[in-house]
Image (tube, rainbow, N blue to C red; front, side, top):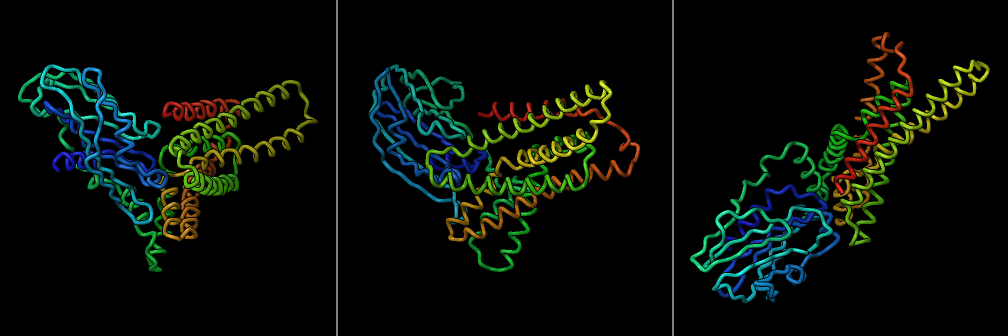
Length: 407
């Protein structure tokens, strides 16, 4: 019982995401056997896709004594649901045991190959009862190796940290509240949920990312108008809402789909799109400069037409890039509402969430234009498009590279 409580408390300190599966395994070595207590914390979206079981875990937890594999017996299995009823996370606890001969010096190896395609924290803790272990064992993740000696044995474990629930910021508490009230039919709760979705969307867009800096540079470099900022915000809303709906359907239909990997690849695509916009501005600026050097004023009308057409296209691409990566919170809300038979409410909330995102991005663009108009000397500054394009290329490449490194 105590090992189970300790493992559960330690898992509570890990930052579980809706897509991840955290695994914490305690291996206790005895002279005549090896016992295992494994606790798996399954995020809300992952719990909709798969149902882990202890037999499958035992088949993938390869433990050997002097090269001889152990044959596990599942002693108990407990699966508990935690959180909101619509889309709860799950906690699976497994107890395994296998006979072993550790009365003399032996080499013990353990490898956890269970659900390796899923993201999440993985840790193996070793302990000895009647078996002596080295005094200072390094931290283990997916695999562990140790040489045992006969002796009284001392447990080697990690002190369970304080659970982080009390340290959640207001944004995390708001997300937890929203997912918890999806099944509440009270009109005042529905109204508060809509307002909370808008607030969370606005706060999400204020976090690093979503192309705010890129949009500001673009509007400044192209002498943008207020309508341009509104257009970008609208496209962000449409793109984000469509992305959440598509990913929600795909996550439900395909159990093997690792949604967090999809989000990472969408982050790569967002960075690539921004890089393409920057390259377009860079090439267009260089062509325009070369045309001016050739003194062809009769082509000004064509240049202006191309400028407007290219500007609309670039604004569309920037809006798509800003809303291309669905928010995990919005996805959890949609799946939770669907599980409770209130899909319509989930769609309303993710649309409002997208509108909140669009509000922040539009406000950022309008603020920039307001500053430019208030100080007229800023409006007279001419930033070469090729300079703006070069900076946007670097920013887009940086966003794509950061997403690639997370794969």
